[in-house]
Image (cartoon, rainbow, N blue to C red; front, side):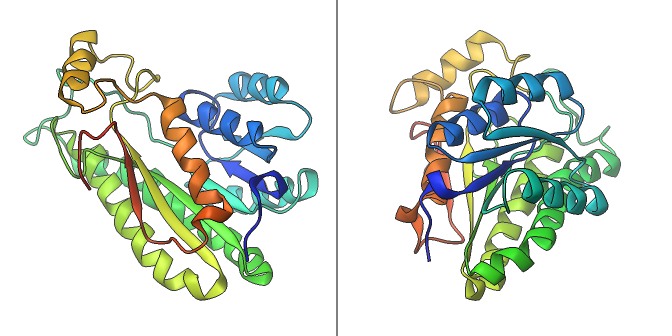
Length: 254
């Protein structure tokens, strides 16, 4: 079974700003009903929902809390209709600043746990809440957001990259478990995006150096990654699951 994006309700986590907002805009442009999840960015999320129109609404929930996730899923179903696609974009507080990054001799496990709790724990909570509905209609799309730092840790952001690597493993194991229910699980991995709140501390010289090393001679934008994410929600990807699509202009071969 497949559904056109225009017939879907799409939940984007961490969608109040940055990449999440670009993802919400991309799905709304395709005619989807879009649920904008936020944890703290209430004003930004509500402003985005107002911008995108009546088929879009903001919903507050901390994805690391299974009770909050279940409540949010029920609220979305009541307002926009049951979720068909979830894009797990939520990110623990993080800045891509190579000079200020945690070093192995100073990082504690708490930093790794904080990143993993949102990346993997959030994905687990979302899948657990959505699986019954997805299975009942024999259709569901789970899209996780990764990073090409897993394949090419050019800057060793240890905690962030380890969490994204674990999320990639979860994406692949979940695809095996959920496939018989008609649910696909795939990842879209970006490079350093120009520009989001998380990458705002990155010097322009770093962006320019990445562009110079990239076959397309440009740095990926949030809109570039969002456009690629549409594929995994569309009927064109109906036979694709457990995959990681790297969207970085060809910098990394996955």
